[in-house]
Amino acid sequence: MSEQNFANHGKIVPAFHYFVVPALVINLVQSVIVAVKAFENSGAGISRSVGVIQVLVSLALLTLAFLARIFALGVQDRVIRLEERLRYERLLPDDLKPRIGEFTINQLVSLRFASDVELPVLARKVLDGKVTGRKAIKQMIQTWRADYQRI
Image 1 (cartoon, rainbow, N blue to C red):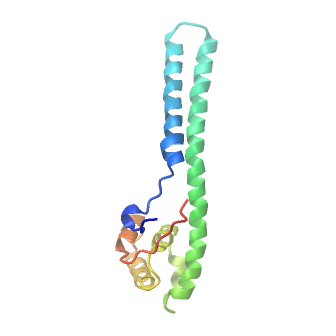
Image 2: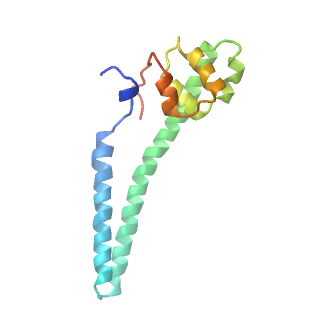
C-alpha cells in the first residue's frame, strides 16, 4: 500500500462507485424513458402504471444503495469516536482531558489522522479555534497517521 496522506486518503470502492452506482443510474434513466414513452402513447393504462412502478423501483434501488453506504459510514464514525476518545484519554495533557466531550464527531473523525505527538497541539487548536470542518482539520495535520480500515 502506498503511504496515506491528505491527498489520497479518500476511499473509492470500485464495485460500488464504478459498477453499482452507474448500473442503478442507467436503470433509472431507462425506466424514466420507458415511462415517458408509455405516457406519450395513448395506449392502455396498464403500461403507464408499469412505467411508473419501474421508475419508483429504480429510485428505491438507487436510494437503498446510497443509504447502505451512508449507514456504514455512520457506524464507522461512531466507532472512530469511541476509539479516539480512548486515545485522547491517553495522549492529551491533563488540562485538555476534561474537554474531550467538547469534540464534535467531525473533529474526532478528522483528528484521527494526526500522529500521537501532534495530537495534543492540534486538539487544542481545534477546540480553541472552534475549527469544525473535516477538510480544514485534516489540512492542519503535518504528520499523517494512516487509517487503512476506512469503509
